[in-house]
Image (tube, rainbow, N blue to C red):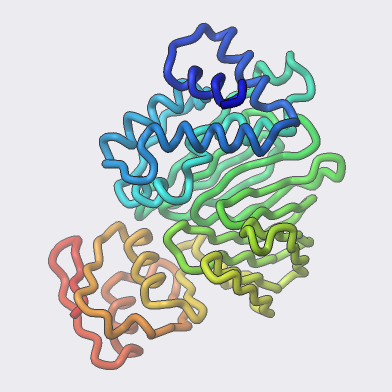
Length: 331
């Protein structure tokens, strides 16, 4: 075991002074031995209980990680996001601070002032966040955004799991980078929508204004990038590596900011998950006969759940359902 693995293991299992925490953070954010440090951090996550972990154990491990990594703002997962986090956010939960500090450790006096802010939007709600550079991000239901309190270094980096609409302030000297589990997007100043829910089959990037570069994270596609122009959309399926570029009406895909709802060749599974987030309900699908259905439909702003379900029923042959308070049962 290398000295880095020793440091990481000891760090996550013992109490330290603030000075020592800062020292370890500086060591981990140095721009060398990246692969070795990532392996050490992921190994520590394994010891904390990944991937077979109960919600109670996840809370305990996450509390320990927050204490060590320096995440400052309180944050509560909903139950479904806890389960998704086990599979999609282990590296984030262990070292979000280190991950976002990577290119920000330019000056020690500046670095020491940086904390990390978490924004989580629960089911049935939406929110708007103003970033340190004045950029704005609209967050959809069930979305997590993490960003530093100050942008320093060569890039402005944030992490998102869920859906966000980004209105980025232009800064040619410090590009803006959005990181997800599946891909990263690099921009200078632009407006775009990014939907990257961990449980969805696809990740979509839809450009409204400016230009973006999309870089895939999948091992078999590592280094492959795509450029988008206004009213273009990149659809990426992480499980298969399939990539499709489409011409779309971009504003339709950010209509959710005002309460709209848009599905474009969406799987039945993704539609169900979306409705659960937007309306804060639980949908129980008691059959697999609808799994192959794909729907393209745009709902008006703030459409009632009753009307949404009635229209879906009209579009899916033989679909039957009944409502019991906050639960919908599809037969």
